[in-house]
Amino acid sequence: MLPRFSSRKAKTKREAVTYLAELEQSVLLAGGTDLLVRMKRGEGHRYLIDISSIPELHLAVAEGSRILIGAATTHSQIGIDPLIRNSARSLAEAAAGIGSPQVRNMGTIGGNLANASPCAESIPPLLVHDARLTIESSRGERVEELEQFITGPYRTTLTGKEMLSTIRAARLEGYREGYRRVAKRAAWAVSRLGIAWAIKEAEDRFLDVRLAIGSCTPGPFRARNAEALLKGRRREREVVEEAVKLCLDGIRHMSGERPSFIYKLPVIRDLLRAILNNRL
Amino acid sequence: MNPIAFTLNGKVVTSEVEDHELLLDTLRERFGLKSVKEACSIGECGACTVLIDDEPHYACLTLATKVEGHDVKTVEYLGDKGKLHPLQESFIRHGAVQCGYCTPGMLLVAYNLLLKNRQPTEEQIREALSGNLCRCTGYIQIVEAIQDAPPLF
Image (cartoon, rainbow over all chains, first blue to last red; front, side):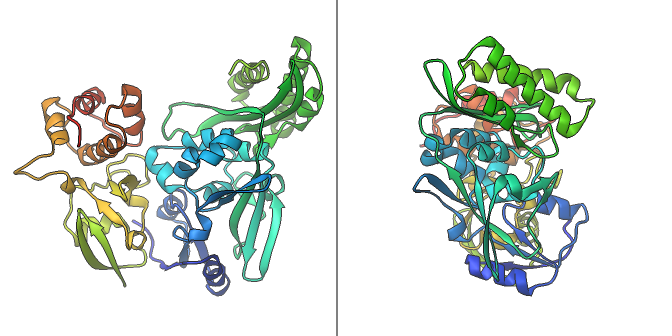
């Protein structure tokens, strides 16, 4: 059973942020797959503002060198969108593997980011695509890089009066890219680890490498040390091993030693080797 | 209370629903559709699955107000006691119904799959069923029933 609350269905972004500003103890409802579960377990809110039917928040369109994605776009929509499949393939792959078909039909990309679970599947691909977020309130809007937006496990810079409205992801052309997750079982299992990558190469030389790893650290992160090391280098065993080592050292540095690292780190090591050597 | 109008199993219906009312409760209590089951209540088991605009959703995590203007289908749409749907016949033929609790949800995700894909592979069937739990059959009979179902059109 859900606790009692009042609800408002916003028809526009403007209406949503106005409700948020005016109603005390209000919270935004998009897909409901996280919020309503938490509320059934006792989390209380006086007002729910349903933003799932706002047309402005349901879209994926090209905008210059970026793809503009509305925050209430569902994982199902993202998984099959031709533009995203072409220019942000890792995101489409990650979205198509989230939860179950029902969860993908309900859950939204904005909800995934705003909840900021360390294992949120959308985050590593969006980090690879340098995602920039637009956050709106009744007072105006601000723009923030996804990397800065997430401040810790389940923590973001969003205040209770703000709404994440739009995600702008860089289009990457001429890259090989993908997303790979490891989980106990396919459906519903929360990802044990996830890696998104986009790599541009010519004649066995790395021109640009982007790697983002989720579920190992308090928040998914871009392995920037390894990326910098690889830039311009030839794809050789020693180079790849050095980059893999930088990634693993980075994880240990951020998380300290964890019991799960006995299996997680070797799995990441092998995945990274396969990704960098173009075997995935 | 909020007045809502939506299409339920092919007919336009209206109702008054509470702000905090779940679609699950609306369908069971206001429309008497007890085929929509509540089991885990947190969107993991799929017993409450309904089709909204022909796509599977968990009714236990959907506010009733959300379906205003949309199309909702429960297993009653497929057939009734007098005339079962060929997909339901196939479930019976293959022994895919044991305790029956998961069956309405299973039938709806199977129906949704067959609407989009006339000849799904076993892998596609298992993927389509991945949001619905069955503790009796071990899924094998359900997969076979779907593979063996006659085309919907």
